[in-house]
Image (cartoon, rainbow, N blue to C red; front, side, top):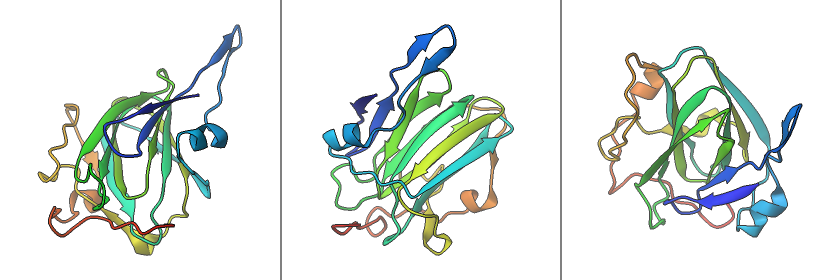
Length: 188
């Protein structure tokens, strides 16, 4: 398992190192020891799977508020997605910046998303399956989000003919760079 930095503080790309033979391959997808070597302390408390029938499905941009902020490791097990994160940690030098990359069942990449980041993705193929490792349980009372097309961030999504998005994700309020964001206290 290889760890690659991204332009955003603490967010990293995890690259699997498949061991291949005539049966297929085997790869380590998570290693606490390797993550710790890169300064990432990840304690999994929940594992989630999403299935999306159609290309053009957009989910996001989601996060949880303190004290239930969560780290995530996202992997696309079937199909292809364009995965996007935004650093919403007010104390971060990359506050308000975003990063996107393609995750697929072919490229063996995962994305580690730190606490204080919004996360979302757009499916590029039909029948996608996305797996999440989470450091915190889902806490509906602390759910929040920013709009996928909020001009405060200037996100660039791949062009798709038809977009499917939930009303909830369409209707997040405009983000104010001066007053909004997440403040992470030590130990959260």
